Image 1 (tube, one colour):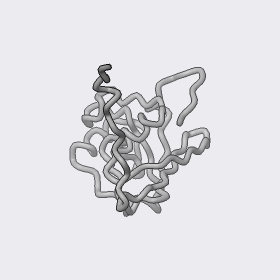
Image 2 (image 1 turned 60 degrees about the horizontal axis):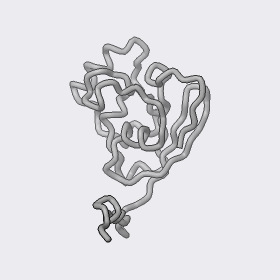
Image 3 (image 1 turned 180 degrees about the vertical axis):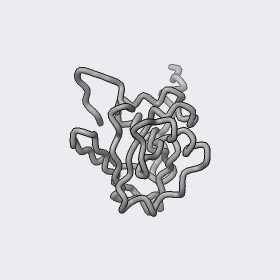
Image 4 (image 1 turned 45 degrees about the vertical axis):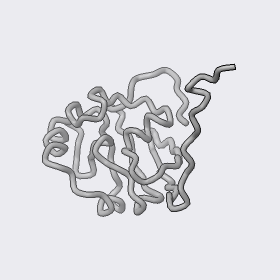
Length: 133
């Protein structure tokens, strides 16, 4: 009996030194979702992994601005500053402010346990009904 290649793929175990991070995701209506992540995961990938309908029309290349999020002030010092490319794209978003970032440009780190951000309504695919996570 032959076994397909897909059946032989083993899941990658989480290493003992991989810290599980709790990330708090909010929608503009106040809905709150707590999801787990590990360091090195882009926030956009986290959102997609858990089924959030984020537009991200460029696929995370920092050219569309449709993964707009807001970071509460208490968390802004944990993140590296935005690049010139990200700042230029944020300038194109009429509703962007000092707390605005692009989810495709932020990678999780061990310091982000408990991290919070708000997905902006203009970055969500309009849907009548959806369930995240």
